[in-house]
Length: 564
Image (cartoon, rainbow, N blue to C red; front, side, top):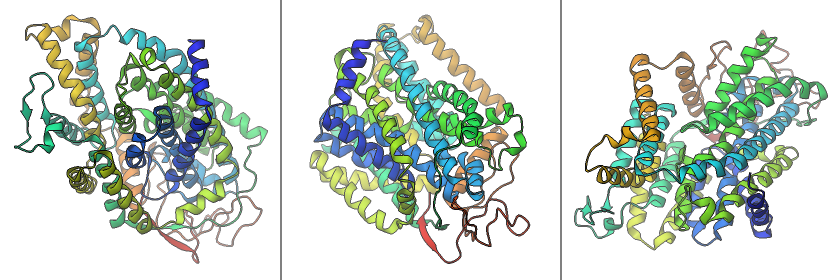
């Protein structure tokens, strides 16, 4: 680890303006994690125009704060309302909400915050050690390696994404086609412009991302509205007891390590990490039958893993210039807007950005820990905001934002068109993430691939003759063979797809492990005891024979929410 670089990073992160924007980022991230119809990808897409007027360091640390802050916010509604704010928080519902029904919502939220802080800190330390090493190694890579790395990233994201791999590959292909619009960087020939001077500069990534994730999400959420419970009572004691910490220590340790390494994979991040952690904890538990009925390890492990995974996923972006998921693709775009190309030379050419972002994560995690414990009640009240109100604000921001980037009416039409495309994709079960990722990686892939062929006089054998490139080729071949042999998703993955679909539609959510009975999410009529020593007569924790385990609602106070 370069101590001089670390000290330089803290010098950047501790500047008053950067402290302010780290706070703004993590606070906004927590809010969008709670609010209906929003998430880190749409929010970062909406904030991209703002990066034009902010200092580079402030803009990037703010967007990064939104990313990992959203995972904290999603936990709150998972525990209290059985409504995951993010896909990575789906697993938290099984035991976190059951703890809330038993009057232990405070410890569930407390152990989530503590585990997330520890997992994120462990991942940051890992980044501090590994990022410079990988960056030095990556400097030696040439066009063939980068071409295969980009292909590997796209295919792995397609395989590990939330939609079916076949659909993700189709969307990635469309994204690569869109990336070719404009002037060819090597030959100077215009491609797919159809005589339009506006298309000569290509399809603007900011306009596309704001349409896909900002406007597309709004249109979809306006069509789907569900009723959710309004939580009553007080949270009670938030800090876990000594016994809670003892029961969770192993899960937190395992989740930190597991999440860090899974987050390094393209398409990994928080979702895969949390699912894997939950499965591991159930395997190693002395009493696995407690999982699904309020086991604190079932909350601590996944929450730790998803934060560690979301943090470690920054390593491929900062060291290799390869975004491993759609949110980091948006951060990649934000860096390009600032005139900075992420990759192996980032640590030497822009050390303030490289080390400043890593140091700001430590500061941001500490802020999130402080915010998440005493301000839970305020964040829960945000869930009552109607999607109709949010939609009006979001559409206004997107229209003004996309125009302000280049003062182009054409970009506004592009955003509107891709907003409709994003809406149709969600309606038909396609994930827009691979399209945005392909739009970012497309130029890198095309340029590297063509440079490789020029180096070898047109022979594709160059990808097999170079050791690192060959490793990526073999990895791709193994992945394709595995998919051909498997053909169908495993039972865990199939149930996960059903779970995330059910979350957005407000329907029952099956357990990915196949052990816990399905729980309902819609039109629930019970009030949670949040640890204030009182229970209503209809508390499902005391009426197991009359109510389905995990049912929550309040018959007198229902609010209509935008669907997650």
